[in-house]
Image 1 (cartoon, rainbow, N blue to C red):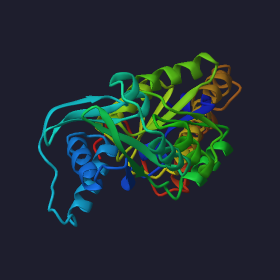
Image 2 (cartoon, rainbow, N blue to C red; image 1 turned 180 degrees about the vertical axis):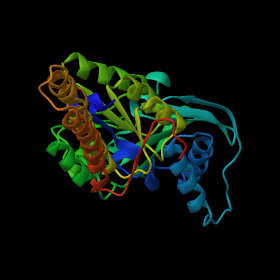
Image 3 (cartoon, helix red, strand yellow; image 1 turned 30 degrees about the vertical axis):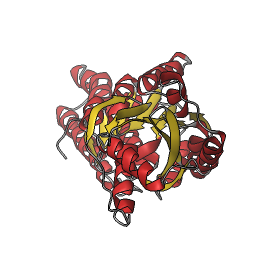
Length: 340
């Protein structure tokens, strides 16, 4: 693991929960003419409420909040036959309607549904502003679009600047659309973006980088990141993330501040340098110099004993220098699998 921190030249960063807070909220919505906004909220919120995805949770919470002021007193109905397609969308029966929510291409290919031009234009504007869009359809027609917004962590831009200073090339890897991904990438200073990747595709994206000769470190926090974290040469899990991501990683950051990543890499590199220095004094100095000279009679036994003691003192003192390390961030690091 320590060798990997020295050799890594590329760091792949998940977007949601790593560069951004992961605390999404329903920012806006739009319905096609003739569709009541409250009905869109009611059906979309009900189906997404059965999902465990952060985007689904944001839509469900936003729908509940807005329906509290609904003059008709509508609430989220129960859902039957719920199904989730990882990275693409969800479906179910709610309020007597067959409802599907997800990506535009998924609704078009899986459900043979066409997105109206007006909704597509509204979605494009939202994506250009860095929002994630989810199209909602029921009873065979796309009826609306919901926009979910996330916020960038205040330390992300500084963390990426420090990662570059350590010789690492940052890459943003996300399942979000390209426009939303590039909005975030531009805000924090990442030039290389791999967007629109399904969960299984994250592993393949890491493999492609490795096959191109790169030594890859990866940081992520979700279940969808676990396999890619295991594939990377160095996996870094955000401590606020899922257990699957933590178990698959090599290092776990206790909190979610992205500044902990350059701190962890810098501390690991210094630790490795200290180990190598200690090995020189413990083996090279004693075995190649002190012991042979004493055996050949060129060194007084008292001086040889003092020299060997000095090497031990040096090793301990050199190691204690690591206690003076002060991270720029406020997080600490622990081995993967350690209880938080």
